[in-house]
Amino acid sequence: MKHFRIIIEKHSDGYVAYPLGIQGVVVGEGDTYEEALADVKSAIRCYIEIFGK
Image (cartoon, rainbow, N blue to C red):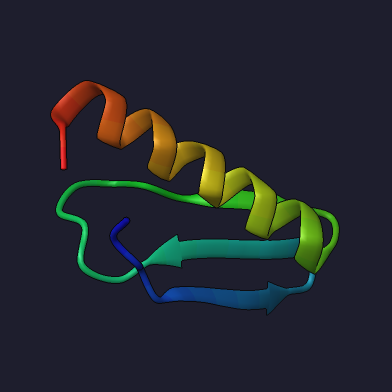
C-alpha cells in the first residue's frame, strides 16, 4: 500500500484537499475537513484504478 501526504486547506467557503506526489489534478473538497478528506481519498482510489500505481 502506498501512502500519500494530503494537504487540507480551509477556505472561506469550505475545505480543499490534495495529495502530494501525484502528477495531474487530484483534488477533494467539502464543507468540512472530514468531507474534503473523504473526497480526496476517493479521487486517489479512482486515479490509481485508471492510471495504476
